[in-house]
Image (tube, rainbow, N blue to C red; front, side):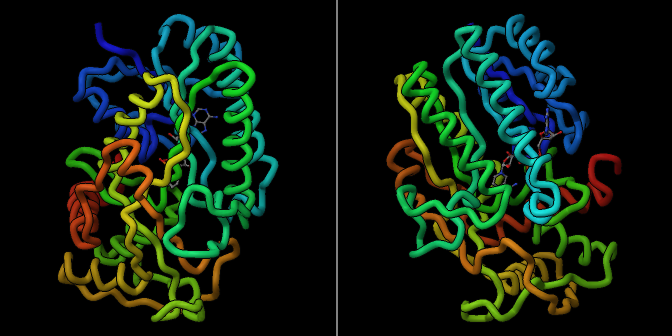
Length: 328
Ligand SMILES: NC(=O)c1ccc[n+]([C@@H]2O[C@H](COP(=O)([O-])OP(=O)(O)OC[C@H]3O[C@@H](n4cnc5c(N)ncnc54)[C@H](O)[C@@H]3O)[C@@H](O)[C@H]2O)c1
């Protein structure tokens, strides 16, 4: 019989691509999503959805009880760094209190295996590059603090109640599959924003800071393809099957600057991308690049999409076919 996976936030960007991969690989999937930033159109055939909010503990428990999942994947969160400074309580509420609802409902029902969407934001300003899982964790924005706090919660629930969990700390998720891509409002991620200029939907892109201690002065990030993230999630289930818990970085292990991204979009789209230099954004570290060695060892995982052009190409294709996102 197919194993069952309950996916919170499965109508969002990363969650929907993982759902697509799970369905293709024979899992029975139920998405639980309040559609606050997700899209019902992002649900592939074969996956079911229950519209609901993690804040609604009674409804959540009822749905979990009926579905009886073998595993839970927890993508649902509030995830805008800038907004987290302005509305920290909303972030603590959704990412911690609502997440706690999920974990306690799971434990009440004897469901003890969870994959959690954590983030490289748990580290803050790295002391060394590439960043390893045991490096100091000093998040510099409320969003990152909520992700780290939830990792602590999972660690303590493992010790006290035997809850197995794999926290996957993604670096910058990017790219698209044939059917599914990135559609956020507002969009804060660099690749879709540069693509908007290529599509003629914006006149120029703003580069947030060119006075960072990097070779070209702009921030450096590690872009990991969303399909590679999906593969890693499915492999993480093996760790849970072995009765273990882990915390793993998911990145490409290579950094690209904001100007590299603009050049890559120019190359892929054959369009010129005008840009202006803006001020630094609060809570943006200069360089974030993963060491992906532990994920390679633990999951036998190597990203298939290594080059920035390759990642941008998949995103460009999706955005060209969906110029206004899922509502296109
Ligand atoms: N996109 C990235 O680059 C990135 C990087 C690191 C970590 N992450 C983490 O990965 C996860 C997914 O990110 P994403 O970019 O796909 O975000 P997203 O906003 O596209 O998806 C989040 C989904 O969760 C749903 N949701 C939010 N709160 C909910 C609630 N209370 N109840 C039910 N559903 C709720 C939304 O409707 C949406 O479908 C998040 O936890 C995020 O913090 C993302």
